[in-house]
Length: 410
Image 1 (tube, helix red, strand yellow):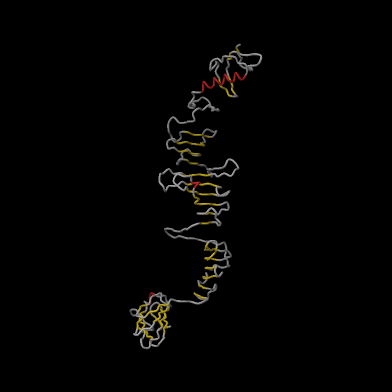
Image 2 (spheres, rainbow, N blue to C red; image 1 turned 90 degrees about the vertical axis):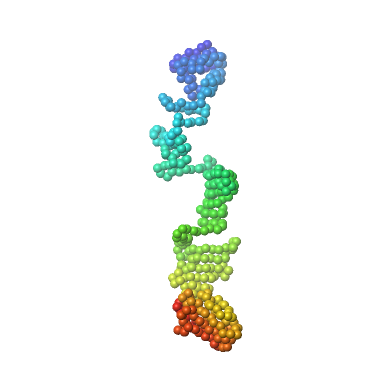
């Protein structure tokens, strides 16, 4: 029996009491989707016995597969209405423009003009928020543009971003940024161990833990900046390394350790002043102190009254000679050992010495009464207005100081 529905009629097809041999339909819906809109049967007659709804479903599916199997493109140019791309309607996942341009493919907002995504097929660039990307991938926004990489679940995952090079050189490395790799909440910059390998299987070069401590060469920084290795501060002009204390009750120091044991401390200690200290953990005391207010230096004392105050013994340089010699600016004591003939000691140019610098000359051999020790000057310089000074008594000595021009007996 044939079924000829009217315009608005609704029929159940394939009941247990009546069967339809042929059906002619104007609009056919399959799972809610319209699959035929022709006034005449689009696919020809559906023939055969339709015993139930399953028979009709199978027959329609067979017609659908035979008419859509050759579809490869969606004709969007010149469409008279919106084109609906339903499930399984786009057979080949390739979309391309008729010709390359800087705005070849675009996705706009519902207003039809505000661009969201732009694909420049001329230069191979993608822009989000911009129709003129200047790089392979560019994100632009009027306020606070953001690119986010996030987990899609609550598991212990590691969002990451990697940078790979295909340059075939043994020194080339790949780099990656990854979070929560050593501990939750951390940040790592990692380098591949070899060319072509994954950076995340390589070495951590820069690390920030969830406390904000930064580690270079370590993934366990115990301080705001923790460097495992050497570092250098250099520049082409003025170069500074600055340690700022909140107040003079706080420390501003460098601590030198061997293993885990502290050896030396250099800097400003929280002693309510701004004096400079070199502290030794060996004696638990300041070895050297420089007062900020006066510049006085104390060795073994933290309260020097003179420019140099030494709390303890003091040794100066001793040079022993047995023949004629000329002193240097580093000499402090010249000891003349046993000699059988007179000897001359020539003083260094007074202009090369600090004003007030002293030198002592001593007859250590005890022979000066028979073998005089003559002290001479350079050029026209004087010793107490004389050109020379003589030590003529056994074990005699003299201490001279320079004013930067001449010498004087102390």
